[in-house]
Each structure stands twice: as C-alpha cells, then as structure tokens.
Image (cartoon, rainbow, N blue to C red):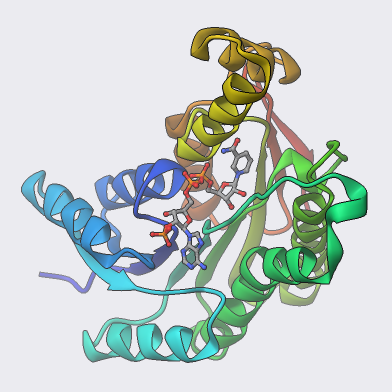
Length: 258
Ligand SMILES: NC(=O)c1ccc[n+]([C@@H]2O[C@H](COP(=O)([O-])OP(=O)(O)OC[C@H]3O[C@@H](n4cnc5c(N)ncnc54)[C@H](OP(=O)(O)O)[C@@H]3O)[C@@H](O)[C@H]2O)c1
C-alpha cells in the first residue's frame, strides 16, 4: 500500500473540525484528529476507520507549547510525513468593550492566532524540505469585518488573516500553500452556544434565536459544516496559495488569490 499523505486537523472533536476530518479522510488523507478532548477524537477516528478511511485521535491543546511538541512527536512516531495542516481549533467569548481586558484578548490570541502560528512554524521545515505542504486556516468573516461584543475574537481572526497573507507571499513557489476560509455564522456547537445565550437574554425560542443569527449572514442562512469542509478540501487538493474564501450562507466567494 502506498504511504498516505497525512494531515493534522485541530479542533476535530466536534463541529467544523470533525466535518473537515471526515471529508479529508474520504479524499484519502491519513487524518490526525486533534483536540483537548481526545476521547471524542478517538470516537471520530473509529467512525472514519469503519467507513474505510484512516485516522487517529490526538490530544492537543493549541494554546500550550509543550502540548504542540508532544502531539508532533506522536505524529512522527507513526513514520508519516507532515503533509497537511488545518488550523481549525478556535474559541469565541463575548464581552462588551469595557470588560474585554488583557486576559480575554490574550486567551483569544493564544488559541486563535499563536496556536496556528506555532503549528505552522513546526510543520514548515519538513514541508519546505519535501517541497510539498498544504495549510488551511479556518479564520472567519470576523477576520474581515467587525462584530459587536466579540472584539477580542475579531482581533485574533484579523491577526490570523493578516499572517496568512504574509505567509502566502513568502511561500509562493515553494510547493507549500497556505489559504484561509472565512465563514459567516456556521451551524455548529459554537453557534448553538450563541443561540443559547440569545434565548437566555431575550426569552426568544431556539428557532427564533437561530433565525436572528442566520439573518446576519449575507446569504440569509447558516453556513453548514459540510460547506466549510468542502472548501477546505478544494483548497488543500490543488494547493491554492494565498486564497481567501468567504462563505456567507448562500455563496462561496474567492476574495483573493495569489
Ligand atoms: N461557528 C461559527 O459560526 C464560526 C464561523 C466562522 C469561523 N468559525 C471558526 O471555525 C473554527 C471551528 O469552530 P466551530 O464552530 O466548529 O467551534 P466549536 O463547535 O466550538 O468547536 C471548536 C473546536 O475547537 C477545539 N478547541 C478549542 N480550544 C482548543 C484548544 N485550546 N486546543 C485544541 N482544540 C481546541 C474544540 O475541542 P476541545 O474543546 O475538545 O479542545 C472543538 O473541537 C473556529 O476557529 C471558529 O472560530 C466558526
């Protein structure tokens, strides 16, 4: 059997990351499905194996340097090359401007920006050596515009988009590509938590609260996790360097390409 290409998908225990892991496994990638809750990643890996794919659960806290080192060591133990990286793990915590403070900003930057940056730095030497690498960052429409009450989240996603643009310029022609997908509200557990907060604050029903968020998407619908996953598969497939793709609930728009 030929050696499969391997990919690390962070934040794969649920939501968008789990959908990306399933889709990449269907495309033949060996998927390291990583998150802090390893047991959920193991369940996903077993599900992928049961449908003919190859995957392994991995414990990883992207906000912790030693956890990143440990996870990469585990991947190298499998004797697979580091071919793909999907930086999907993320957090979003709301707060009004006056209550944001250093800690909340630092927490968002640690997970949503420094986590991806550190992983890219860890993967790049091998990717450059083999002149092959596919990196996709799951950013957000919050990396392109602002949303009230989530300034720390928006700042961290803007940082990720800006970093990705610079990295794409630097990596051009190297065989390593880096791209970003920027979805608006996605139908995932993260959005379900926002729905729950709206229900508690306003007394609206769950359906009404979901409609409030869906209406904020230019396409008028929540983006599905499968749509995000399909975009990641496309970006990975032929190594689209410097691409910035926005998903608004109805359409997928390429905002930039190199
Ligand atoms: N939902 C949306 O509307 C939306 C829109 C645009 C962009 N996004 C972005 O899409 C990505 C995935 O979002 P989602 O909606 O699928 O969120 P979710 O349902 O809350 O899932 C988040 C994932 O990230 C993992 N995670 C969180 N902190 C982590 C850490 N420190 N280290 C490793 N893994 C961590 C979680 O697993 P553990 O808790 O087990 O670690 C989980 O697997 C995020 O980057 C988010 O910002 C989401």
